[in-house]
Length: 164
Image 1 (cartoon, rainbow, N blue to C red):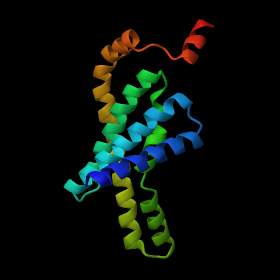
Image 2 (cartoon, rainbow, N blue to C red):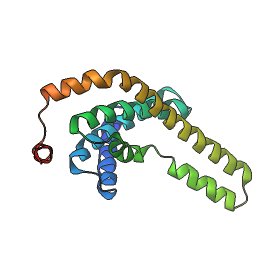
Image 3 (tube, rainbow, N blue to C red):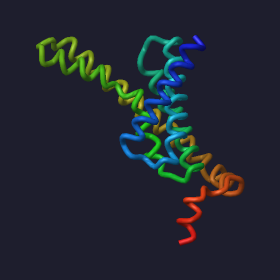
Image 4 (cartoon, rainbow, N blue to C red):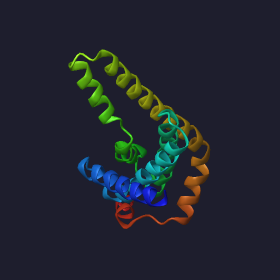
């Protein structure tokens, strides 16, 4: 189990960083996006062993992304959306919606509707997870930001931008 989680973390880390490079996010956000994406996939895998439904693993993985990405956004002084996008790549139900569309075009309406409902369930779970994380981090953000401003120095490139 631990090996599966470690491999999952490494692959999710690489996919998050790779998608971040493809979508041209700032370099300073690539490492935090990779760690956040990897951690969320580990939560997803761990919850997948506990339950057979798709709702809880996706919900808790989205909460993980929301909390870690918000903290990383404050640390690297970047918008949180820049971190959300690469981290979500592992959780988006692309294969499920693809199979549902294929079933729909082949006239297999029952299988297609099951795929669409599963996709919608996952999308709602991800959205609700982000809302929960934002609500939690809204309470923490002011004190966390003060701590970061006091203890974490600005990177050289940001310091140069502030001096202009």
